[in-house]
Length: 225
Image (cartoon, rainbow, N blue to C red; front, side, top):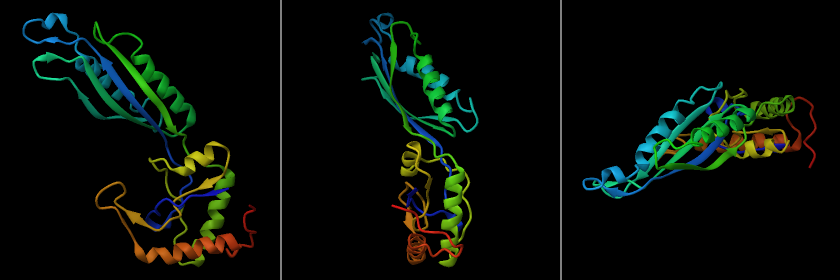
């Protein structure tokens, strides 16, 4: 099994489920031309990208828990030049592995034909992390670890589905039962206000030691190497 020490959640909830993640880059290629003297000779990569973005964002909710977000866009060279290039970065989330595969396929289908005459859009990337799905075995380990947390004065709840991926997603994808969120409690993740609750450090360490030694109050044996 795998223990993953991402930041602890409120109430020391143990994570058994995470969404999978998709990371893709869309590159639109057009044809540059002077916007005043030869506008008709150009083919706008930004216009093509705008159409792609609209279609990509429309995939939100195409399956339960699926989201797609275009987070950055940049392109063109000057305001009086028909833009020959435009790049956008996409983030996707999904609850089930099959939905991730389907989302990649749907996005690629959007660019099989030119969105604006004289342009093309190329997609790079794909699934970044598989989802962490809740298994019976991982649920049993969660209950056992929770017993150790209780004896260390911590909470024992199970976390709701988390939207971000972690190393637990990677270990689970190769068949290893995994539980997550076992690190010290924190908040403000991925912001300038990110912080750790110092008073959670010692009890979190105690819970881990109890688990490794098999001192969890429910008679279980420590996991084998």
